[in-house]
Amino acid sequence: GGGGVMNEKLLGGSKKNHVEAERAFTVQNYEVNHKQYCGNEIQTSKYSFIPLSPRFVLWKNLWEQFHRYANCYFLVVATLQMIPGLSPTGKFTTLIPLSNVLFVTFLKDAYEDYKRHKRDREVNNQTVKAFRNKQWQEIKWADIAVGEILEISRDVSSGEFPADLILLWSSEDQGLCHVETSNLDGETNLKLKKTHFENPKSRAPVFDPNRPDAYTGSLSCEAPNKDLYKFEGKLVRGDRPEDISAVNFDSILLRGAKLGGSTKRVMGMVVYTGVQSKLMMNQQDSRHKISNLEAMTNKQIILILLMQVSLCSVSAVGLGLSTSDFADHWYYIDSAHLSPGLTALLGVGTFIILFNNLIPISLYVTMETVKIIQAQLMNSDLSIYHVESDTPCEARTSSLNEELGQVQFIFSDKTGTLTCNIMDFLKFSVGTTAYGTGTTEIGRAAALREGKVLVDDRPKGIKLQKGFYFYDD
Image 1 (tube, rainbow, N blue to C red):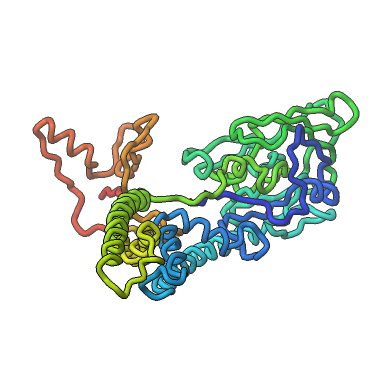
Image 2 (image 1 turned 180 degrees about the vertical axis):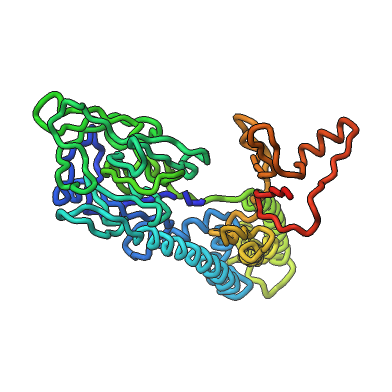
């Protein structure tokens, strides 16, 4: 989520990010609210390019790479080779290949994370109209503050909501608003929202899209939380009891949703921003994912390592025994400075170095190379290219290529989840007269079960539009 749907984190440590018992703020008080609450800038990347950060790409990537048992094994071998008199081979015969493996993987992960940084900038730099300093201004999503009034239009950013909002005005009649929440709950059907309703006895002016500056008051609501289907708040517009109104979930527009249906334009007041929006509160921290292939490889490396340790131990014992035997039969061997036990102990390290090729260091290089090529092939595969929206496949990471298509279980709450409803216009009737010719696939199947054959009586060669198959002479 791809995503898309994304793990968003606050940038900069100057903003307050403490745990709130309750949220209370003044409407359209930018100078205070933008300092008191977190900003709306997001970061979905895994690494940071700041050296002093604990998320610095070099430190964190090395930590993740050494979760692979083979890398730990070769690091031990490379360390043993640096000990004088222990290695029968060169000092750098393992260290250099290991460094190459780590460097190639580092470059791949850094490039993929760079693309996440790029997408973050694109999201943060999207613009929206905000009423600030008594006038409408085009501001970036990253600069949105709590309490501001925004105008969301279908013509800008596809009508996506940049933060959690209270709906104050809609271009539709009766203050209704249709919302698509597929990015939140996967449902493509439209949800109906209503503008916030205030007490008719209130003397405070209702929200006027032509005079947003006249809309004043304060909002008290629950602290940021993960519940996508619940909101409780209280809007105070004056000193009288009639000026107090309750705010419920029917008037809340969540980040991640967007305008749908016939709704062209709405205005709303920002309640939660950035990581404190309900969508972001439901996101888990990014973690290093290990594929089944990599987990299986780790288990096989452990088995090979146990076999290697056994082989090295037997060889070391044989070295100790042969050393003792040589000292008794060869005059040029100084037996006074020769200990069979110490020779066997040092021999374990020597044999580990000699037998390190049992675990091929090129294994991970080959795996990473294949994954990178696979990702490029998926990006250029025309069979998974969506022509209507001009959307190709985008492999945002190549770490889990082998997991694609490995579906073991499908959980469905209803059959509608697995069906596709397609309606084609063929016929219509006016009064008692039917117009249109032709039949559908369902009609042909039903006739076939009854032993009948339906023939399409439309002339050949007529041009029909997709979804509109009507013809009548």
